[in-house]
Length: 84
Image (tube, rainbow, N blue to C red; front, side, top):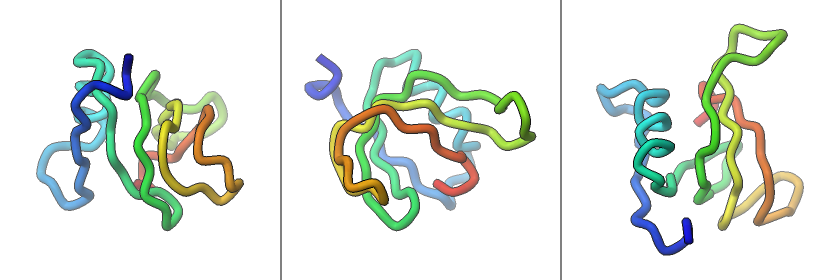
């Protein structure tokens, strides 16, 4: 189960590009701990890519723990990578 996997911490000021870290989380099947819209979250990363109508890199993930503006601590989320 994903919850039992090691979580990796993504820090905004790291030299490694965040999209590379997210892609590594997919291939290594690791959870990611991050801050988004003022909330700490732990997510399972499922896809990273460009939106159909935008040049922003998007993250499709399943949040397993943490806060949310929608007050839903668990569930599918679509996040703008530049806001992480």
